[in-house]
Image (tube, rainbow, N blue to C red; front, top):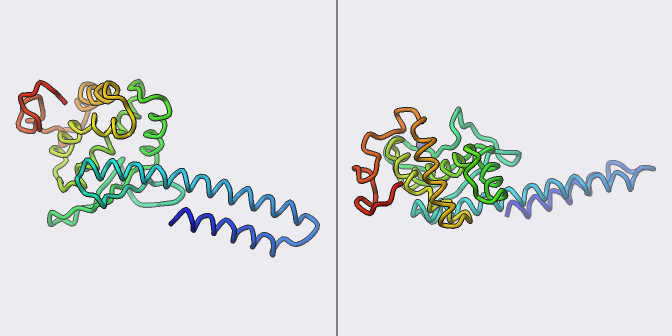
Length: 209
Ligand SMILES: [Zn+2]
């Protein structure tokens, strides 16, 4: 729907240009307006498509079919303070179904897919994990430590849903556990978050995370 309005907005811009800029440089002005409208329409389409794909992943991982993802950017502006992503809580146990992500997180997920799903760039690994982390919040978990631990165990699934092979997905999950998780603040590291620990969702299966 937003794409359609962007396209109509583009046409409106062209028409406005047509009426406002009558004169000798008429055709040049229309051409410029068409160019601006095309660029805006293209970027809008690309952004909305990514948000829809990420929302599908969050819906599957969280079990909330109506889950949504919003990428901060030229289309959307919202406060995230210092966080890479957020899901609003109402303070009474209720959580929003919308995951809001910093623009750089969405960009890095796009880069990670474009670069072949590798784990060399930690920022890309973290970006995929942030999507996973917010999906766990959308499922109704509000404790950061618990969310982080469950998200870590969802990273491989999230990576696969985004297009990685099972091997690439496991490599991403292991990279986060081994290299990133130990560096997280204490409030994000549950003491029982380890293989066969209290928070291991598949205790005893030899798989971690
Ligand atoms: Zn969180």
